[in-house]
Image 1 (cartoon, rainbow, N blue to C red):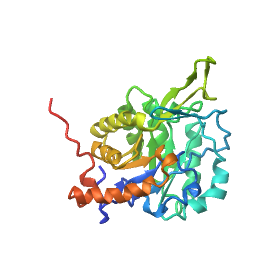
Image 2: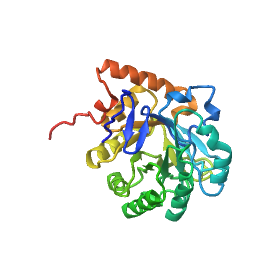
Image 3: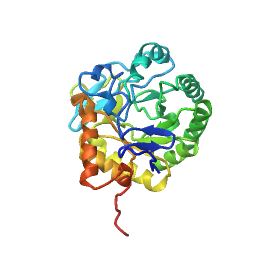
Image 4: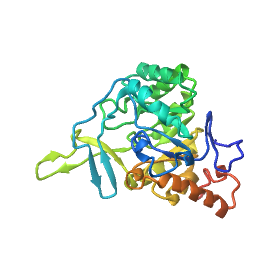
Length: 312
């Protein structure tokens, strides 16, 4: 599924997408990278995924936008961003200079809009490594419409891949009856990989005031609380769908990384942990190198999907 022909022991191949190592930073948790420059060497990372961009600027949801929970973060940012024009004008050159893969995360209100954005970004293929389609944001109106119905997921992936030559990742939501069916549809539509999972929909309530705390009422839960859910989804999709997986959800240390890898993820994204430990991603790359030595593995692919299930 991710067998690499590269000699670097940490190099990863996700179909057409080639990464120097499996450690990425998740969209929405790393800004546009400039904010993190003091904390880590970007060239150590497998790739950077900046915050989601849309066709037009978005002001996002009303505040409050975040609520800390006992084991994570509930956010209702609402895809606040400056739009694709300003991204290309003000952010792209810097991001593409960082000596690591640049994966641009995009969201749209329709399949046509996503395809048009992909086509436009394809013109910058000398700077952009791949696109990640955000069809799974739980805190904007219509944010998961194309990621909850298999037929719509496949249709979107087909239209985007026909409009763009860049490798395509589909970021999927856990807020469905069967993520496996959505992953199958994404694969059938031509996705090079799937990111599993986006945040789990939730809310927070101030019972004394009898009001929701978040300005957007509902938000997405991330952090350690969702790791068991993300691992379950990775296990299910890895066993049922022949598509490379990028594991996301509650990763905070090297053991978390390895749990996702043995479950079937070829790469991982660090998300909420970036807020309190911005240097973590680069640290994990070094620790992953040590894992290969301790496990006597010549390549990281030897560990992907190595989880042993009990016989029934």
